[in-house]
Image (cartoon, rainbow, N blue to C red; front, side):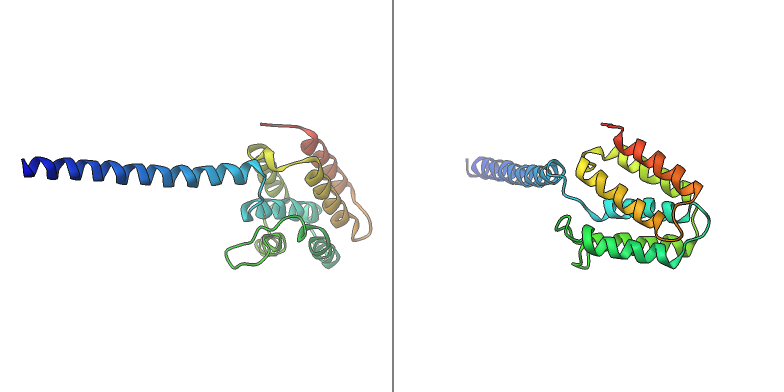
Length: 171
């Protein structure tokens, strides 16, 4: 009889542990869903936005210092106040735009590949791309393109494609 009680006790204890683990998992999953639901931006978002801004600056095969300076100014003025996301070093995640831009510039990646990667990300994560955010993206891209001797033909074409892609709603 005692061993049967021990077995029942162990069985009930294991069920309890299972329930606790399941609740913990559900709470974690709910937090993730809330982050998505409230469109909490993250470092991956900012890294992909950096790819876009790099593409705008590099589409003419030359990135001028004025383009990077324009990017830094608008990141400081507009992007840092956008939300409270932080990176793994507890700095504002929006600084990823500058860091990744510089890394892409150092690697000399193709502007069109970076642009297409951004569009792919945008299509997979369309819930981030509100009208307000799309407007800020266009404003930033426009300032980068205009920062050195106005916009050239390749920048104008990429800006027009971007404007169309941001207006296209995907799920």
